[in-house]
Image (tube, rainbow, N blue to C red; front, side):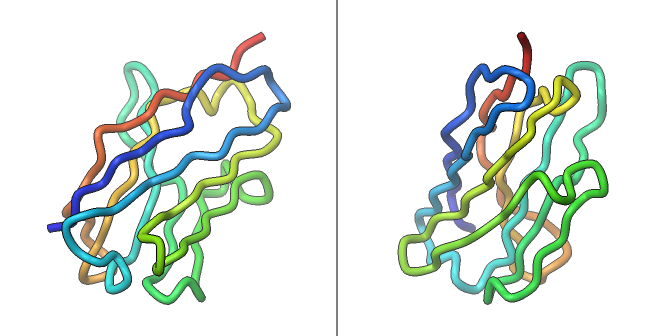
Length: 118
């Protein structure tokens, strides 16, 4: 399995931006689809976005379309989540995940907290 470490979370005002990073180690992430999920307090973890191993295909939850952008740099083993126009309802712990078969995410990071508040 690949090991994942997220960073970049923090406190931001509504309307602001953050960029999350996910660094992979242990194995090259170039053969893995990568995704971001989030879990708000007292809620189930939910899908946010994913990107194919090639970077050609991306997928977004309706709640973040047009505001969030996922990207990857396989040569650096890193995935980014650019979050713009943040809303209080985006507040959650954000997790990076890797999928070898493209559908089941078997490797997870420890999460990074994002808080959107004035």
